[in-house]
Image (cartoon, helix red, strand yellow):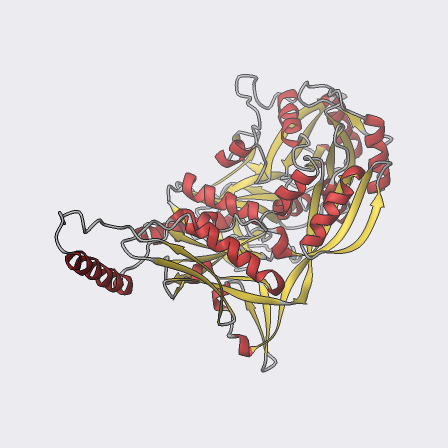
Length: 598
């Protein structure tokens, strides 16, 4: 295949604007899969993707297409649309020369549309606007074109109008990919230089990694070197996705394909690494992707302690194809041994939980999410804290800094009042407000990340009747008035339920947490006291009344002193039980503790 006939492109869009459906039609119209083999969301290989109807992992497909008597090779990468998976989008764009920017004709330009478009511009990609869902009664193509020009600064003159669901306009998309997206540039004399854009673990073949070849050629049986650690391996198999796996003998410049090289250690190949020939290594390795820094943290523990090693192995395998996932060992007094994991957002945390339970069959407990805090101690040193239970004592803290995010919200103008009220409640500060069109507004706010990660998205959607969308980018750490809230059960501190909260809202949050927790603590034979403490002072409490055994049932009359003796004996027994008894906290308590009325 001539390099001039290769096109590499991504599909980017806001969530639910039709990326996966368009990918299905492109695969179907190029004959890559037969109608019998086709299914909806064919590139969404994970069960959890199909369950939620969203794309989580960037997936690729190499498509054969004939145009004007020439055979073209189109490497397509379908990317996620949710803000939590923006790192996947950045990796995909680095392997392309152009992209299809899909916009829903009924929804118009939304927050993630803007974020993805800017990412494509930063990568110097050729952007082809595609207006989808033109068949809907609420579609407004002219208005959408105007929003593309006003909000993105991209000409809509060559925008392609399609209905991916009804297979309308797909041939125009294929033609535009060939005509407008440039062929890959390469050094004809250069040694092999391949960029790792994804990797995963196969139980039978070891580590499999997806590469984009920039210079040189890769053949089966070549001896390759991973540039970062200088490890050398022999290539056992190379191939492409059509989207079915298809073995090939050669991957040349511009190709996107998979490599199997009998790599057993999942840490040996990292996303963003450079693959080159062992005997003739390239002198121009890639810088690697900017390391994704997680800001949302939660504890993950096996409900059965015997599954600790299995959980460790599962997390390491997930980490292989999710470079944003971080793992640290941790011990909790109430939950035992587990891991402190870092995520890019709450959705990615929930998806990780589902994948562990569904793909690896491990039942787990996940604690309430928190963000990374920066503590300035009284001795002038700084400490990063991802686990609230590890916060230094108040007397050693001079200041607490928390991460802030720049938030972009796109909403119909009639919901501005509701959205602004929510942002103020979340301790936000307005930066700007601009009209994209006559009735669509973009609001820019600075907001603490801790206010976004739990229920912000759901509340925003509720207040805007589902029409508002948002995107955020981490800005910097800023000083805030925060304090540690500790939960005690019968005077024992439950480290896994500790949290860092705004001082002015600590009492209200404490009341909500205890009220919520009380529902998930079963009654014991003794009284259970649940308390919330801030700075050494109890600020809220709840009580779970004991189960009562009727010790007087065997008394049929007789003197009252006999009954009193039995009741006094029961009271002493309960007091002793209270001192020795342990309260078991159900898994549901940790799952639902975050469901507070904020």
